[in-house]
Image 1 (cartoon, rainbow, N blue to C red):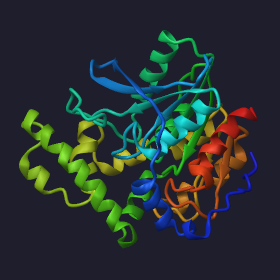
Image 2: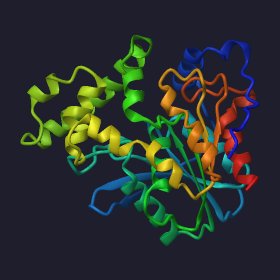
Image 3: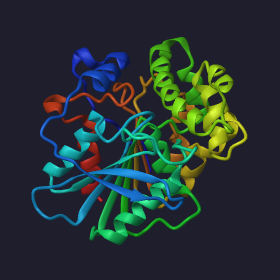
Image 4: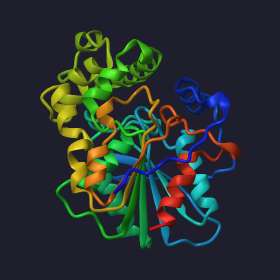
Length: 319
């Protein structure tokens, strides 16, 4: 499809990518959303926790929400979308990836950007146990890469899945990692790595034959973490093999479900290759919007309903 011309006009104080990213991640609050937790068993006998919230009236529509790196179902970019969709008559379920719901998962593996097998299990669970005829999936950052890979892989997407929205999608994981390791993103990289390493301590205690304290001490960067843990725990050779196989960029030409990508041009996490202009122009199901502002998941708007949340609803209503 032709590239969508963005109408996003941020407030003067939130034009900075850094300000909008930090404000949205650390300061924004969402009130008045009630979530109910459900635990499901995955195909490999591990578990995932799902946080449900509902519209005031019975709905046949559901949005599945996927968080970013070291996020969870209570992050404001998740609860903000859930509340906006609930207010507009659509149920929501926030997926907490393995180890992200406040309790360590059962396996040595956890989650990663391309773990579509877990999303597949979630979608199948919803279809088998609920009565939704229209399902939408919105992914944020890591979750955005995951959902785009999911609808572009060589498998049949259930007909109930009607649309996908991907926000701040790191379509090229290797290049995005390179950006994260640059000085401009040091504060973010340090924060992500601290959270990841803290969780890894539990893995060392439970699986001493698979990862050692020496391995842990060798992790100095996010790429080190992916070399030493993520890749090995999930069947990849190393970090670059993981990035190459899990990046959604290669799957975008195959997408047959209407899919909207919103990536801000001032998102410091994204490289030039994370803006798939060619792929969008050549695939009638792929829509790409590139606002000048917004940072990383920071599309601040009036009334505490973010621009990307409004666009997600507008996108599915226009189908």
